Amino acid sequence: MWRMVLRKVAGALAGFGALLLGGGAALAHPHVWVTVRAEVVYAPDGRVSSIRHAWSFDEMYSTFLSQGLDKNGDGKFSREELSELAKINVESLSDQNYYTVAKANGKPVAVAPPVDYWLEGDAKRLTLNFTLPLAAASAPKIFGLEVYDPSFFVAFAMEEGDAAMAVTGAPKGCATTLTRSKSPDAVAAGGSSSLSESFFQALGAGSNAGGQFANRLLVACP
Amino acid sequence: MSLEASLPAGDRRPGPGARTILVALVALAVAAGLLWLVSLFIGGAAAPGPPARSPFGVGPREAVATGGGGLAGWLLAVQGDFYRRLSGALRAAREDGSALWSLVLLGFAYGAFHAAGPGHGKAVIAGWIVASERALHRGVSLAFAAALLQALVAIGLVLVMSLALGATAQAMTGAANVVEIASFAALALLGLALLPRKARRLAALLDPPSRRAIQAGPACDHYHGPDPASLERQQGFADLAGVVVAAGARPCSGAVILLVFALAQGMLAAGVAAVLAMALGVALTTSAVAALAVLAKGAALRLASGRGRGGLLAGAALETLAAALLATLGAALVAGLWSAGAQA
Image 1 (tube, chains in turn brown, cyan):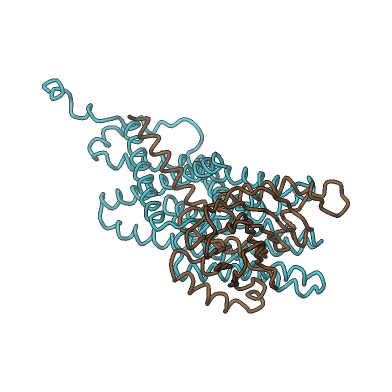
Image 2 (cartoon, rainbow over the protein chains, first blue to last red):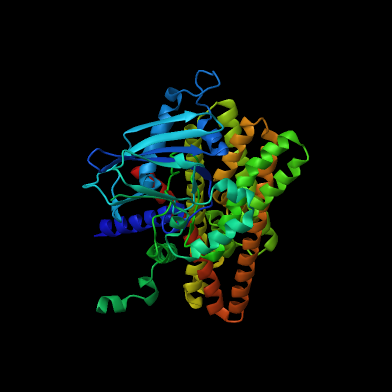
């Protein structure tokens, strides 16, 4: 009996500590800026088979991540030198469900752990590539993909240009629509006023605040 | 029943030591209950939050605000903006020495706003003030010492790990986690060291005055050992050091990342200047919290002072509870880290 009570108390304390360290409806200011490129890959039978991500980190975080990893000192980072870091990156991202929300006909689809991942680039711009397999049962009429961090710790923005979110192998006649969150550079250049205003409104709108800053791709098929 | 009745009334009461332990345990239970209630309250509206570890697996963890109304959102927006501008200012300072001033100003502003957000440091200093302190200047010096320690830990961490050892982000994160768990343990120890002293006073007050008069015989004047005043001074210094370590030893992830970046840009001195300016901003905000705690405690004591024994009891109970809260908070943070580590 005492042991059970003690265990309960210890559990409650651990829960509270975890909460303080970062649980609950928690928010942080962005510490990492990520420029996203994503590709929705269709299988020949019309199902969505996977999502290919290529995420580039901002310069400050790229420098932090890549420090000490140029093992042979040639001033460049090979995939081998970065492989251990890439593994840590994708394994940790599973806690966040890869910041990826995939929906088939409006219903969330589970993503499997990354099958293929690597880091490339330099201390100015490190890019994390990984492929998330999808377990979709049938070919969706509407497929949606969102990339965002509800806690704001990571600020996601889509790359400039049409390649930001691409669709590969989709059935004939499918149409795509792209909605961008504000690019972090535009936000920084625009000054704090524009950021705080939209931030304010988004936060007032409810718990899914980060979702309002989502980068969203919709693929509608006949 | 008859046997019990035949015993002298006083003998059935626990002795002074046992009473102190009882009071301390009750205070700990109340503190744990309070924290649990708070966690229920905060956790009730929970949406999926950021991780207890960095989302990319490396980089120091960041304390996060819970809830997040309009004010919290605005604070986050301002911080994010300042933080983002720091890297640009650092690069500008390389080309133009006069840009160093804007870098230092940005660091200061970032620190002041960042400290207004979540973090256990303010809770530690406020809790300590409620438990043991009345002087404003002491609260402010604690705030400044803790902020300076935080900056020095970040600078030391980056200098030793990055410059001397050529460490990776992973190794640096590991070292930061060790410092972090040590600072949380220091908090738990501080609370546990403080609690028996506060509990003893409260237990003595709870004792009926007649009984105390009997106990406090002439033998009590006979005291061997170090002079009490110097003992108290030593104790006081150890306590204050504990407060500073518990509140300030955990490095700020923004500062660590900025320093690594500054080092890579060959701008270490500018990075150090920015981080010290950050500490000044943090100290300013934390001082405001410390001043609030001093004022609140002063008001509570004034309210209680006219009420004789009841007022004294209320004051002692408040101090005991604050000590128990510090201990419980430290234990909760260590346990949270441990359970997060176990999941990882």
